[in-house]
Length: 343
Image (cartoon, rainbow, N blue to C red; front, side):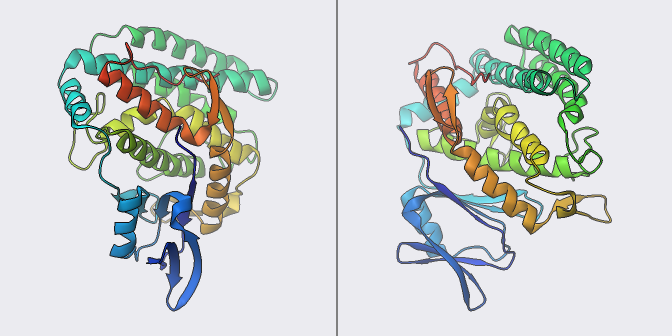
């Protein structure tokens, strides 16, 4: 079983990452801001515009440490990863499946069934735990409609129809998402999913951590020998990690949405830690990012029962386990891909 290591987050805009022996060193100008042994890391997320040295990049490739670069908005720019592990037969089978509409649809259906199941349970948990503080009837109605969509998706006959079902269910889900925000309601008001750019604090957090989750999924897929750029539901597009986006669909509600809700409701972040730009875009301050990523790293260490393995694993390993199950499905070791169905 893969061990969950640490992830280094670098937020200082003018910091430069270098390699000193076996350590990652973060420098700004002539000052050393910190150093971390490379062997303790599974990933480095860099939000600095100055980047990293070629020697550090080479060391990350050699040791299998995922080094990802992001812009100031939290958008993914580029990544440095090691050679794809796994045998050539698995990769050839993966490409063959991606060209087979029937097999692609079978896997894609399970991705979306998992997403709808998990989104529904996010709503059901809110009704159970906070039924007296929210509009429980509205949330229950949305949950019921998502449940119907999940059953339809399970037997859907085309990828286009599946995307339509997912889109309608997402509208139901995000239509009541604001009910789940219990503190600082006005500051974190959610009026719908807005992506580029996010125009409120909640959307800003969702967008950032969806991007982080996509990077985690890409690393997990590469780790088992699959190509994160060749998907089953998201169509191939140069530069887009389509399979990583596929894999993260079922994980969005349980890993990101619940995290953002907890960050707001437990006051991990404050309304004053967000900046409204003239363009209408809302950005997180450095203080908010640090608080959120510290909480994110702690959350990744929390145990969760895996519904297929029937054993507890750290949350941070869920993408890696799902990538492994997907690889086993493509190899023929499993009859189908088992989505992560959380309760």
